[in-house]
Every structure is written in C-alpha cells, then in structure tokens.
Length: 509
Image (cartoon, rainbow, N blue to C red):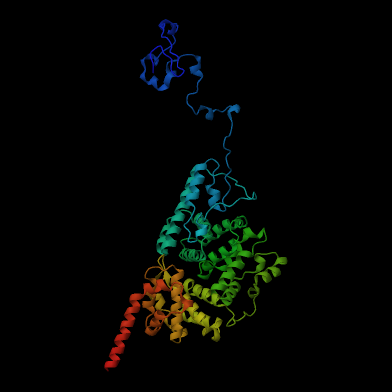
C-alpha cells in the first residue's frame, strides 16, 4: 500500500478521533428488592436458579413442581391427551381375570407371560392372545389389583409347567408341579387356552397328560368339566380367532376319553353352554371323529352306545336327522355296527391311524396286527408305500423327548409285527427308505437314524438290505439321503467289512 494519506484501489482512510467513555455509562438506581443469591443465607436456595432471590406475590402463585398441571382436578384442566383404550375381555378366564381397567402396564406383562413357544413359526406370536369381544359378553365385575396379580402369577405357573412338559415329556415332573397348584379349575382353563393353537401332536400330548391327572385324581372330574364349560361359554367368540376350534377341542379331549380319564357321558353336562346356540352336538361329533381316526369306527360306536348318550341330549329334535347326515354319524344310531372294509383306507390314513394306535393307546401288538388285517387288503400289503407307512408309523411312535431318542425296548416289542410285513429284502430296503425320509422330516436329529438302524439290524432287517440301501442310486430317493448316509457311514462300513470277512472265510473253507 501507499502512504498513510494515499488512496489505493478505492480505499479512503478515516481520521482517528477520541472516544468519550462517559457516553457508554448506563444510569443506575438503587433497588432494595434485587438479590444476586438466595436470601436468608440458605445455600439450598441456589437450586431454584435465578428466581431463587426474587420475592413477591408471583412466587406464591407458581406451581410446586412441573407436573402440577397434570394433577389438577378442576374441570378446565381435564384434557385427555391419550385416550385410554378399553381392555377387552380375553377369550377365556385368562383374559377375564387378567383384564384391569386401571393398569395399562399389566396388559403388557400379560402378553409376555401368556404365550408358549410354538413349534410352528406362524404361531409364535403368543398362544393365549385375547380375542376381539363382540359385545355379547361383558364383565360383571372388574377384579381388584390384588386378584389380578394373583391371577397373573397363576397363569405364569401354568405356562412354566406346560413348557417343561412339552420339552421333556416328563409326566412325573408335571404331576408334581400341578399338585402344588391351589386352583385346579383355573389350571384346566389356562391349559386349554394355551394348548388350543399348538400342533395336533401337542394337543394329543396334553390329552395324555389330562387323562393321567384325572385317573390318579390329581384333578377331579368335576373341576375338569367345569373348566371345559368355561371355555365353551365363549367358544363361539373364540371361533373368530380359531376357526378350527371344535376340531382342536376334539383332538384334545379324545385322548382323555380313550384312555379312560373321563367317560364319554360327561359331555352331556359339559356341552350345556352350547345348547342355547344350538351348537351342543358339534363338540361330541368332533370327539367321535377323532376317536374313529385313532380307534376305528367300531370302537367309537361301542363307546357311544355304552355311554347311553342320545343326540337329543345335545340338539333340538328337529335338527337331529340333518346333523347326523351332515356329520356322517349314522354309526351312532345303534343296530349292527358296520364291519371295516379292507382296502377302504388310503395309504396316508393307514399311516396316521397306525401312528395314533401305537403312540396314544395301550393296544397290544396282536391288537394292532388285527387292525392292519381288518383295514389293509392283501393287495395293499404288497404295495411298497404301505410297507413304508407301517415302518414309519411304528418307528415314529417309538421316538420320545425333544431329541427324538428311540425307545429301544418299545421298538423291539414290535419286531414280530414288522417282520410279518417285511417279507423279503426289497421290502426291507423300502422300510429303510421310510426311515431315511422320517429322519429328513425330523431335520436329522443327531444319532437318531443310526440308533434306529442298530436296533433293527438282524432282528428285523438283514445285513444285505442295509448294504443295498447304502449303495442305492435311485433318483427318487434323494430326499435327505446325503445327510442320512453321513450319519450312518461308520455303521455301513462295519457291515461291509464284516461282509468281506465272511467272503474270505468262505473262500478259505
């Protein structure tokens, strides 16, 4: 830049002048009411902030705390920001007892404890969720907070008992836990709610549990009946969420009747809540349907006739004929019971019915053989698919626990039955294909297939059949084959080594 007085590129220098400091001073007046800190020498007053030193009428009018406005009772301050959602009654005593209009937090905790882990992925959202109440039923009394907490504790205990039973299938442990409960009827109601939407196998397993509890008087028949009546009182509403509720109830109760836990005649009283809606016959029909599936129509008809029940106990006279025709219940009308027709069942039905007969009933091997002879024709017995169905039914019924461990003694007890229908090596190979597919459907539980092979070796299935199965390259048998071969590779190698040794011994001789 140039000199001090020069101008360069449009800049103009400004001459300096003296600043009058007096013009910057503000006028001040003495004010006795101003304090820079809390009065009275109280250090705690500093917590009030800058207002701690002010005194006047405004201080007395300020609210004591920031939530004061929410606790005011005057009409002008009653503004509901979030409207309270009315708690709808549950689909059973669970929902009714746990619902409380005064506690939103308890609703959240109910959703956490009132669910069982499900083996079906599409039902993992909680099996005891509430149904939408249609307004036809209202709560006559809202439970107190104390009773709600007690009810919640009772439900949680039921969930724990059923969780343990489903995972271990330990009847003795379940019996001990249920004996400790103070209210048997509540357990029945809670258990039904928690079990209904589980798998058919779980419902059958629960029916087995109830039959034992009833036969050993751990649960009184009267309490079981009253608990079922509570469920049936709202069953029509429950059907909104569970369209197949009648079928599920039939699958749950059928094992109880079949095992002798309750007589079929108890349904006359239990179905009273359904009669006013003219639905009294639907549950007995579903139970009979399941009994026909597991015991056969003859046995189901005998049970019905010995119970002295009549359809007029459940339905209006004018509706009986059409109901019997619709549900195909003619066999319950008395007279001569129709004999089973060999070959009348499909292969899928043969397998499912055999599985039920072996796993859920106490029929002997001779009785099961008699059933096969009655329902399976000679032509069907030669069908490889029927051979596979028999093998699958027997072996799957002898698996237990969460790891599907084979019950060796039980399986060996059916050796004579299996040998009766495995007449040659080809039949035996088809039986092994059935086990390969069963292992695949169970998602290859460790060591299960190998243990089945060991139990069946020699006594039921020959060495040559095992070796032929191991060397098979049939494209139609590829499902689960790779994993199956890996699991039993040592078993097959030992068999082939023994076979080679036998050939060497034969050559030497």
